[in-house]
Length: 428
Ligand code: PLP
Image: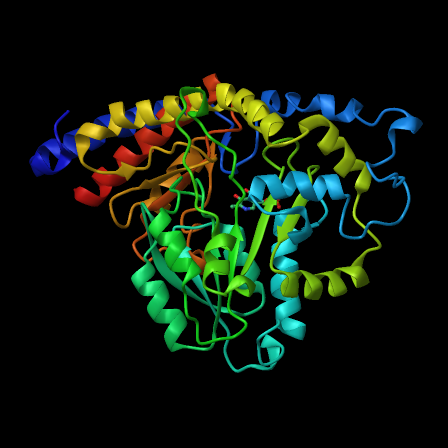
């Protein structure tokens, strides 16, 4: 099939008619498939079941310093857990505080604390300020936008490029307006594009000059070790933001987050936040009011199971063996079915959990609706933009990890069919 734009109106109508028949046949299959959320598949979760046996007996419930993990104490988290998460973030354990089972929870809490009580370097709680703004690289992670949306924070979209957010825009916006208090970043294998910030981008983050003293970079390194091609020696690398900030004396300007949600168990892993001493002291005083300590049994379980960064890398290669074929299946199908038609573009990630897909302008909602009516659930169109509003209605997030290979093949084929139908409806 030739590019759609080279076809005559009559040819386009004929093609649409034929594809509608295929779609009706697909609807009758009664599919019930889900490509909506970036969840690990069951075979991935099985890779970590050994962690559950790692703290089996009473005698094994002691941390390295003798702490009994079944009791209160160690509010910052076990030292060895802070060391493990520090290795993922490339920071010393002293700069790391353990959270509970979710890094998103820590992000919400950091924003919430700033909103009610302010942050070091600022002029008090954000809730007392007329306007508070956040920069939101787009397409981005819907739950980040949901957090800032919850606090009524004004969200300013910043275009995402292959090397990270458009830094010309970021630098200008943060320098010119002290209401701009933060930026959401997924710096490695970003959600949903899969892009990793270039060295130049990280250096420019390290040298940012915001007007607001309580501006922070919310550096969500959720996919730090989630390579798809590590066994071939191909890993994206990310410059160490904290080192860059330290070079310019701006170490208070970032909160860094990570978790094992997509290393071990989603919703039952361990999470951490890292920052400068000033920020850690501030967070720690506030966290101490919330809990007498998070689940240290789970922290110990994770340390015993993963051991260190070498252990994590070996473990992630087992994930890679399961995930790479899924990503390649989707990208192959998109290239085969849509490549020649000139109606869409998509990313081809080297890591992470998502593929970002762009339809012709004005087609994304229709594609998702068509998929839904034929039994394939996709992330809602617009989710990758603040307030769910994609101005061009074209971005779709594809999450290939959860379905098994056969389900993924069926879901992707249906998705391609829906993209063709929606595009032809637009063009005819
Ligand atoms: N950050 C990003 C970029 C994510 O994609 C996700 C989950 O999809 C999370 C955070 C959630 O992490 P957690 O389970 O640690 O809260």
